[in-house]
Image (cartoon, rainbow, N blue to C red; front, side, top):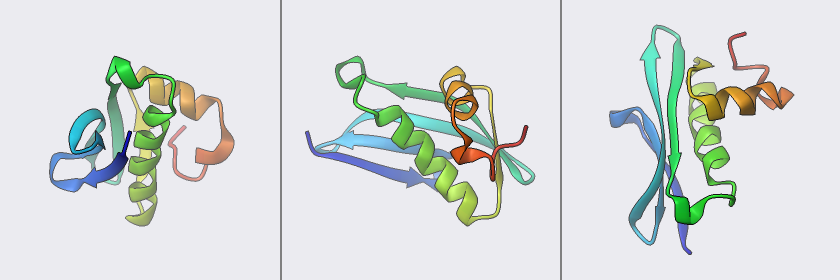
Length: 93
């Protein structure tokens, strides 16, 4: 596996690729100063490798860099944010 995680600002998402093939994404809807993470997906063959977290972290990192806050409707992101204080500076409670 040759994993690449990148931020696709034009399409409001972070994307995971293995050797150029898209295997996952984390999408968000921008609204004013808040980005709402609404979907996280990783191909079944790649589950359990921490890729979903890396996708969410890519979106969160970009939000931090741009002075945006984060919220979530995606069940995975909601659980991730609730289970860690690493996101307290950026997640809207």
